[in-house]
Length: 264
Image (cartoon, rainbow, N blue to C red):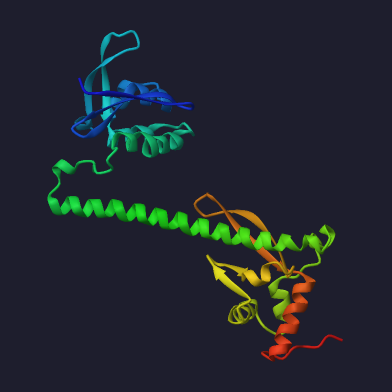
């Protein structure tokens, strides 16, 4: 009998897992219970029989019993059969906790015993590249969030000198409106502000450099939006205060970069 491990989760209860031939096998009865699949026998017939085994287990009363276990590919096939909304959460639990716990060394690759040395190296590199890309995306997201937070924190600092009423005033203007004052598009105007080291772009969003963040020139707020794939994203919408608008006017006039239109 292979070593049996029992993994417990507040949401899904317990799932019995054994390790055989350096591969994780999941108790089909436990999986069907979690996924609310009533006909275990019917599901079993749909699976790849090479990935189905019968293994002896000991129940809570100390009795020996036989139970059906399925390998990782068959586990995912079972998950696809489930209509339960929490199936994705179950998948995340398996991939983020159960499998890493079994593969403690991190050196096992499913099916490696059937691969040539070159194929094994290629697959290992593929797995590594995928992990590196995931880490890169997470790092970019954290950097963007940090930049957003720094700008918003900087904008809140002037509260010591300006009342909440002024900071929360709706009397702000978009960069598009300001650019129009100079007969320019927002794209052209943003580029000038970037060249002047007033702002920089990160992940498609414009941010003030730190030296300007605490001057009360902008007022920003984070809004959520739905991506094409249905996930929720966030974006920092920044508008210029009247003080910021005056700063830009004086800056452009001082440097004589573009002809400033005098207001009547």
